[in-house]
Length: 108
Image (cartoon, rainbow, N blue to C red; front, side, top):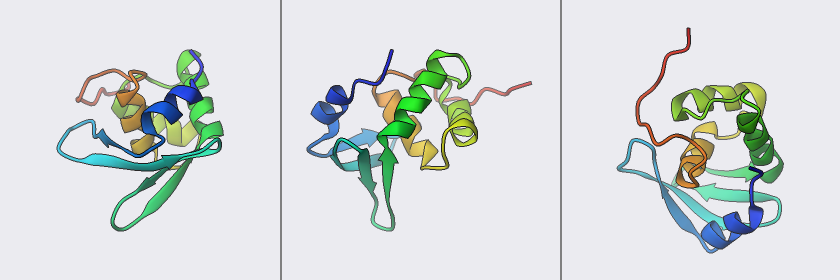
């Protein structure tokens, strides 16, 4: 399932608070354009590039990257980008792309 950017814009484009995987906090999306999702906190801001998000989805679909949220972060940094991978995990989980688990699986 490719990433539907129109869905991203519709859901997050005017700003949105994505709940974190463990709960109690939020990823603050301030806007979305054709190039990226923009997130901010009181002490930092980041740009999650569309091309990297789409690459992440393709690698999930091909089985290279795990759907487990904890393992996803490690995989995303390894195979895609060091671009706020934990924030990407929160967003992908909110979109239903990652598993709903809150635990961390161990790779052997």
